[in-house]
Image (cartoon, rainbow, N blue to C red; front, side, top):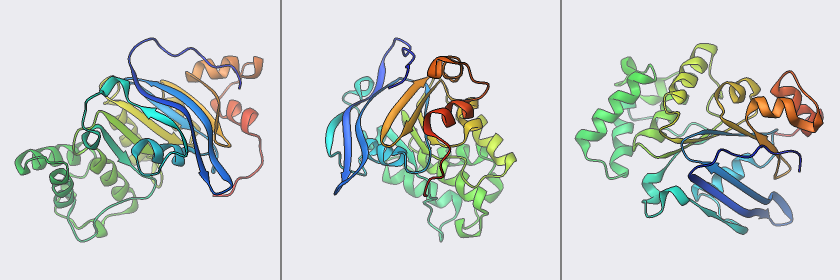
Length: 253
């Protein structure tokens, strides 16, 4: 384990205690311990196959933990169904529903009344630049619009923890800027956990970055801390830190 910056004191939103995930003999996540303070943007940065998505799936309850435990200290007593909003790597949309219809539908699945679900849906579509597409079938949207819609679906129930797995995947530069600004609007009001291997995205958005590889956290801290304290030397960019810790060899998808 390399140097790790002490996290800001305060309420802990998420705590992973010695969690591991085994797929038969393959260890995808290896004895990982992590704390995420409440209402910050926390980024898991790592190469393909580092264990980021597997970790996220365990946090969301989509994959069983082989060992260890996950806790939400800041949200004890809250309904888990309403606590987390999750945007996966792949867009999850209903192609035969319009943008508005599917947001209303998912809102109802979260026990939101139809009037509130529609109001919330229209607000999210406007913020994501999709108002003009509200009555368009999702199957007719461009790839970038589908990505933005998937992020809206993760937020329809106004979760306190927002988990975004590669949120900028497939976005053009204009859409990336829109999504980044959208995410930053929730800073200090939601706990946001990102996974990415996009250095620019991580540096621009993150309060804390944890660099992950081979199912373990190698180091973590603010972007400026990582650049000035990794391996006892200073680096110009977060990408330099990343390569110094994870190496230059290519990874399988």
